[in-house]
Image (cartoon, rainbow over all chains, first blue to last red; front, side, top):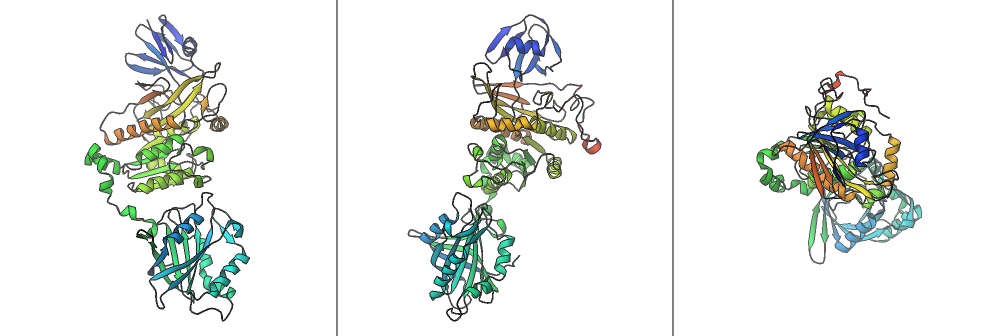
Length: 69
Length: 473
């Protein structure tokens, strides 16, 4: 099963098509989080309008781009 | 500019010298004045001897700013009266340049020195003054060796320049040479000794690569200044610092080398001083302007590698575009704290170091520059609130996070420049949970920056416009 690993979250989700907002909602990720899909050791940023087909062994995580302070 | 002439040493008692420096270089950054009565040998002296120091107190100035000071006339007259009552040869005017570590006379100073003796004579009562007398003009900066001075004879002719100070203390005597033409004694230290530990780590070949490299640090706030700190002793060929901001009191918790008296001055100038104090970087350039300025762009285009420590996605976007067009590797630092909206507890603290290497994924493909770039107004809000994200901004700051992220960025820079280890393109650091994550992002073929139809290597061939797919607001 595809798996979401995020800050404080680590759980499986069913295979299928997901948008960025779907994934953020499931992970309770903040608005400015950027979903990253890992397929076979390659990471791809999921654009807001993009839909990804998640399969077994795929992983989803989130980055939160920070600026310098 | 006055030409070089005879070198003159000023000999001080340590107590007088230290008290005068303490008076002239207080933390409030204001210029101050002292007068010195001095003796000398009768003919063509190479040494002058401090007899008495009069430090003008704060109520004794007509005007007093960080770059300008005018004593009250009544106080000047009282000093002149005391001087002429003494059978001593010389009078010295000393003032401070608290903004400078290696003081040089300013244009105003040269103007006022032009006829200082004539002016002084007009205040001295005729017949009560031994002729000829000597007049000296001295300016001191923050560094002990940071002084400049001229000695004039009674006709206002330059007799010599103050090249050294001899300080006679209770335990020892010290001689300080003037940092002539901005070159201080530490710069005479053997660089190979300073760089010895670098060479042991990186080898002669690695050190040479560093010496051949020109780095531009864009943004010298909390992260960029620590980047400058990290690489100040590496021996780079050139470091250029770009930032239009001036130092504020609230920056002092995280800007290395910034002192209370630096508040109000450009960050780049203070960081330049910090790098030059180590003295192994061949050239340091400070550009107190925006990334978009012509001077900054020119520096970026002529650099070998860029480092970004910027607090606006808009600036990050601009840098990424320049990096792609002119094929410059770009190391980008981000750090901060995110609060949970509902509970106001910390959701994330940490940051990322993202690296763009031409041919690889750009910062857009790494998700570092969001599709909707925030406005400068929002950046101002973030500055005021301490760079805490969340629905409600909460003041704090991120000094410790900056240090960690700037350390990773410096490590990435050295790996790239020397080639001793492959660069990790994206490192996420989660300081709340104590974990690191490395991403292996892929370049998107459709990316308008690094994709097949992107702008990489286009140089000046294309006008600088924002692609429609990357809305600016």
